[in-house]
Length: 74
Figure 1 (cartoon, rainbow, N blue to C red):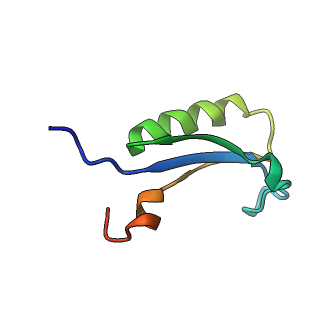
Figure 2 (figure 1 turned 90 degrees about the vertical axis):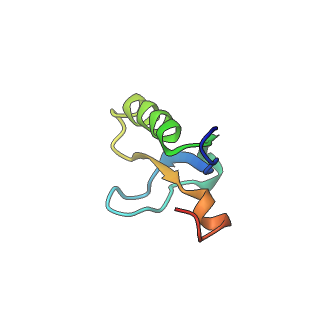
């Protein structure tokens, strides 16, 4: 039996300021992908974060979309 699908989204781009979470240009925010588990989303997030390590303003995030769709999920 497989685990329940829990939707996670990975997005990212350049921030206006490294001490805040406001993107420089929303039209350039990158949708990395949608993942059925946190582990898969974390792998994608880590790959993008490592690929942009030289850009101090680049940040990627994992959004727990399943919590937005159904707040009763863990």
